[in-house]
Length: 126
Image (tube, rainbow, N blue to C red):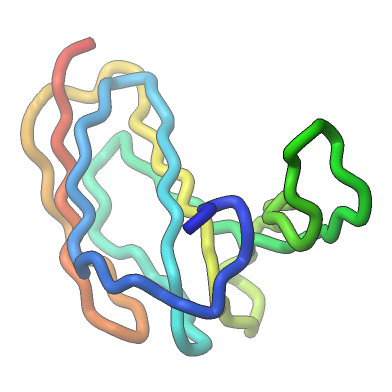
């Protein structure tokens, strides 16, 4: 499956997100909300932030290089405004950042969505 192209098939991996990230670093993860969901991340440790983006598609009609596949691709990431009354569904991008000066260690914090999930954050010195 090409992760850059939309797919009607969702693969259930896990309700947990485990990753290693250093202070003053940002990483992203692709999530799938199979129903309309309002992501609410609570109890983030000091120095952590999570922003969500709706993954929109564009459709190519001409290949940009020999062998390129035409069709829908994820390209624009539209910032999600938690103050809005809207929800997210389908493919969603989560931008996870750790501020400079955050102490090394293993961090865990709950994440509440349409399906309860527990996310674990591991932080190591860079």
